[in-house]
Image (cartoon, rainbow, N blue to C red; front, side):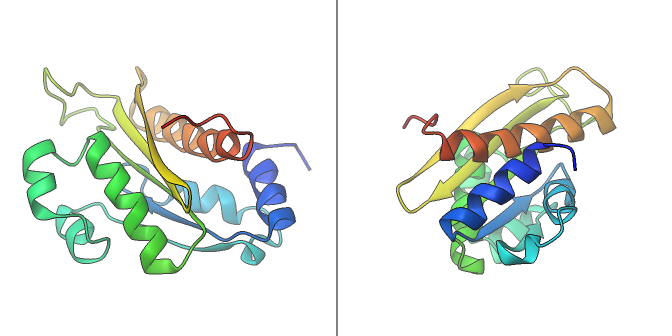
Length: 162
């Protein structure tokens, strides 16, 4: 089996006895798909929420409506809240989240197509990273899923700063 990010993440979760959850908007479940492509991923992956609509972010993940109104769905504040909400909802040790403008439409001067935020919540903190991809819709989704898996790996390797 190829040494993919999802395999590396799975090994670390299994060795450390930790459970992972996801909250995805623009990736539409692609992160969960990649994680569950690894045999035995049920040992460490609890599940995910595809929170494409803001109502799902609010009602399932407990993202405050005022936060969404103030900062928008594609923001640092929102992905932090999504990750924290998924971690709580699913009882996970670690949760990763993503929200972005996959394209080809939906962009603005402030948040052009490709703008993406990824969040990670764990017992010791919550982090967010910003990206701006320049591909088509599929490529932007793939890049976002890859960056989310890399963020989990970086967390395990001590690479996230508050």
